[in-house]
Length: 160
Image (tube, rainbow, N blue to C red; front, side, top):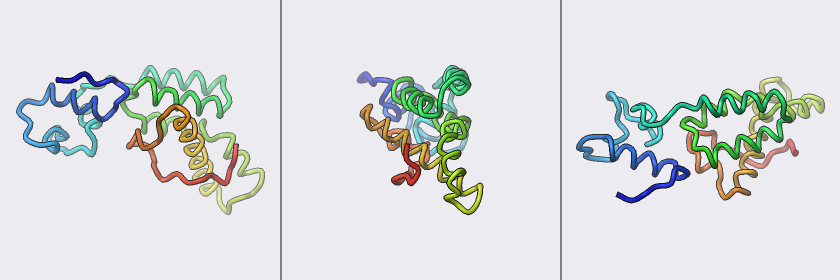
């Protein structure tokens, strides 16, 4: 079997599943764990315990959120995505979405750009994802490389 670099995400998880699932008959069979068919090989590998948890990255982002500005935190988040192969990028995003978009939310609130607080939060998070995607692009990646993360990112009206 060929070597797969850890940065290759889904391909790495497919390889792990091929090495650990006995007698797979299809890709769907590889993604099935305990009668649950997962959407991605990564999710199935995680359910089988083939991937570690993200406690190291949670701790890293927690500490950085305490001492860093949101823009720096977005760069760190993108760096972790690209270089550290977190098991569950969506969990990291959900845990730190407020911190990653804090400056953009403040900007939107001071300008009364949106009718509701909920709309301000949604738009600031979309803007943070847009900014993260720009950092990922500079590193040769994109949000599309992390399919569990929100993908509906359009040009931000909140600019940083």
